Length: 356
Image (cartoon, rainbow, N blue to C red; front, side, top):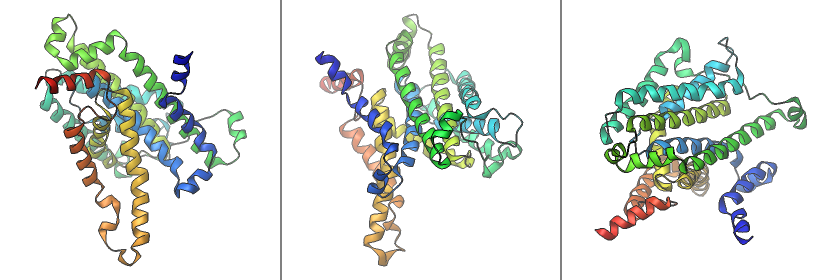
């Protein structure tokens, strides 16, 4: 009974309950001085993207620097399948099945010719793939509308019972995207949690530790790599679909540049490479700092130094990357396992330190 009670009051359960009831208390936004509930949607979406990268980097050990490409493919597939410009008109729910499939196929297309590459060489190829996708989206103006992006993307279809229960249209859209993003985040996290316990999950970890030993144990490293790329890219496609639906536009292709890829990589490094909870915590810390703390600090600085409104240092966005870089260096130096590492990874690192 005590063990069951302890399970019920775990941190994850409490956090989920708080996030589930938060939208029904608008006065909390007044207390923070900003529309925090809107920022939470972005945090949920990028947490899903962090889980996608964690499958490839954390579980399988692949040096992936182009996760933003699959994110963009999911967003643009959603745009093509839903906007009025095209005849498909599948709506959000139809696009939600096709977008991750398109991103997953792109992951297989990337993996097939690069299976022999490892380490830095694979990182360079994935980085190049991300840039190629971005440039292609810019230049395929007849399909992607070039720098303008595809819009407007319609809101998800909901039953009439749900629509009539919320009279304010804007609030209905917000609640729909908010809870869809939260449900997909929780659902994907639960699926990956179960994946860790399966034979495939152990195979991914074995590949990360030693590819040669994995092959000697009768496992197929090529197949495992392709599965990691397929699963990670598909999850990134889901995040892209939610991102475009939330913005009501795919945004311009240059939005999905290398900065997104490196930001998501920082999330899993800070949280703990290979740790499911660490990826979620890293996304919450990094995106929370970027989307919530940074605007609040900027507003505070500008209020206290009104006479120096032209000073670029008063905008926190101008020097936040210095803080990100410093925090990353300190994390790697003093806590390389991350804020919430997996027990296996933490044990490995501490064992190596004791051996040295």
